[in-house]
Image (cartoon, rainbow, N blue to C red; front, side, top):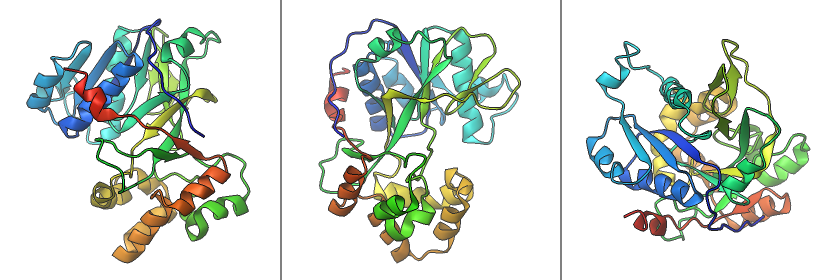
Length: 307
């Protein structure tokens, strides 16, 4: 399904919090896109305490770079070992300050894709729920496209629940057992949190109340998608695969982790080409099952407009 993007005016202020360890070009693409959507404030936590990136980000109106150095972590007495814990701390810190009515939490390779201006969606948010959930869509690798920092233009949605096994196999064939939800990374999406709610604890994907770790269960918002450029760069994906398998997100998918640990390079390549690449065959299957989104972000143009 194709969407169109717009030049939406900001009505309700909203902001974005992210924790990054990425090249400056990718950070600027993330900032430029969300400013284009109307975010009035963006907090960029530089996980590697990159002074050069911080200096450039400071020049952009509404952007607050945060150096996550020893002084920053001194309040906790230590730097949390796991990235997930650092991300959670950072978003909770910004959330507690409540400098904007709504705060989104996203990774540097995640880009909101709304069906209409974000401010309009937020102005219509009157049901009292503590956050809005954006549906995830993972980018497909396409080496024929010109570089655009994050380049992919075709994205796949998770399999819906329920979806017959034969339909899942029609899309992924022999690799269905490795990706029963059609996603390499998270299936939960990301959230936009209403600030000022006593006891709300924003997390990586959703939130909980107070000391209760159980996530609050809410339906996905029909007009919000988060485009995740998780595996669109084949070389970067291959380089990250060992970490993701043993200590990253893939460790939660035991079948996938076992395959990635034991597979030969040729088997890994075949898996990637058949499940993560925008081949005509996969694109046709995704489209037939209403699991394809097409989006052109023109990120280099958005970055050029920052300065």
